[in-house]
Length: 169
Image (cartoon, rainbow, N blue to C red; front, side, top):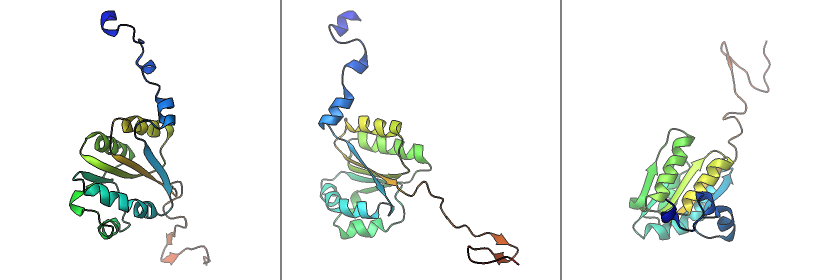
């Protein structure tokens, strides 16, 4: 084993300083943005780049997109719809796994995924994956993910509906 390694450092963590290379901007990175519009504004801003990338013949992958009218938005922006690959996932773990696989497949020019807020570990993992890809990677985080789905639930109390402004008799 010593003959194979020669004078190289013995621990793989010493071979590449990933933190400093990310700070210098070497390789690709994945953009992460918080959105209060479910990514509608962010996708609108990306549409010209996606149109350009879709003309290259590789896939533009959308992972777990919400129903924000993205199909019409992309078609109106000149994106080739036959180059769009939709991936629907059942949970956050599967979403991040699908993004990792799409980025490393070599057949995608862009990968956009909608997710809850990423923790530091998941963000770091995606940044490491991005170093081995040439695809554009974007994670659109739900800025309202910490809020309940319906902040003012209405309970059915025997035919009466309770709201913030009604009284029960």
